[in-house]
Image (tube, rainbow, N blue to C red; front, side, top):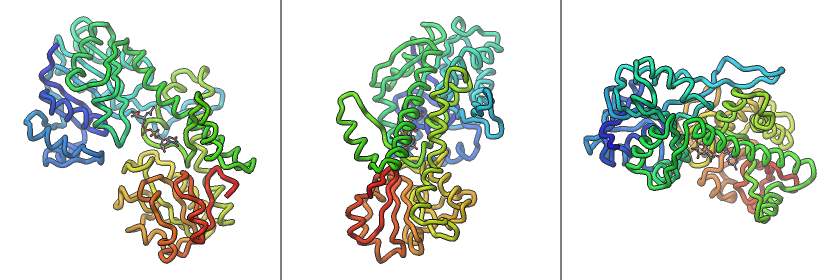
Length: 435
Ligand code: SAJ
């Protein structure tokens, strides 16, 4: 099947790279975003997000004449929905007193409704947004069928999850295996034909609900695995063990691969998606629920550790290094680092933060230094929260003259304890009660 014109709804971390990759591979793409600022930025040839290589590919897409941006969809051969599915901010579910977060599907609903007037016989609609199981059949399909057309008969309908890793999106978009779930086998086939435009990894056909499950299972597995690593870090501190050493040794076992503990789990995927399963079936998900609880509580564990180093936190000055949700990205969404900072401040600490990937970040109630040196200058403690390469490379000898701090706390296993001790720092490491 040949799709010449594609409409991509949602131009965020997934939609924009996907839209421009289609465009540079010969498909006419209309990128749609409800935020006029995003559309204006693209129309000026600029981009609104940081992702390695994205600027080049968007420029190429625009120059090829194949990519335009608008706030409204138009008729097309295929429609691809890549809008956010966050959780609701002010509403929680309740299962026997256990509170859980609820998916906010309003963006998927309104993007689907926006396609409705343009839907024609023979069109293909693909949902890519991470969604609770059965969203394609129970939410998207009925909306599209308001057109009078029948899904699977008059038009094709698929779910195909994005699985790309922020920081490596452009490469993984092309190379990763792609699962395409159709509401009928013909729909899955049509979806495969579209992705075959640029995907070099395997493209596998299945049904829509399986494809939805696949995506959430992947991220939930990672969340549960990080939760156990975080729990190990707490146990290691109780038993006089260095968790990092213990994990390295355990991972020598051929069938064990323990992930890394840290200050918590952030981002808009792994800390969100497991809740979709809890919401869909709270009675079947005690493990998933508790893993979320463990990871959400990890910032508190970091604060307890800071108290070991500083005693009462009142008026203590802390340089918080890193605000992003993970290393070498500029994305601050759902970042455990910001949660740690808020908790430290609640206990009376004066925190100055520094995020090299977003030096001009503005965050509620967090004081951000204008550069690294300013953040550490007057600090009592340097607290490392994100394993950015430039923080890993810090030379403790050089820092001595730049900061009053002689206490250093590493929550991500970035610093060589001996080097820092030799330079004269007292070092605290998360999950390590040996140093
Ligand atoms: N983290 C740890 N310990 C680890 C690994 C990660 O604490 O050992 C933390 C990170 O610091 C971060 C969070 O977990 O706060 C999530 O980071 P991540 O790198 O594991 O994942 P994301 O959210 O950037 O991307 C994930 C990926 N999913 C999987 O690896 C299963 C990606 O492939 C998905 O496409 C993406 O979610 C998504 O969009 O769903």
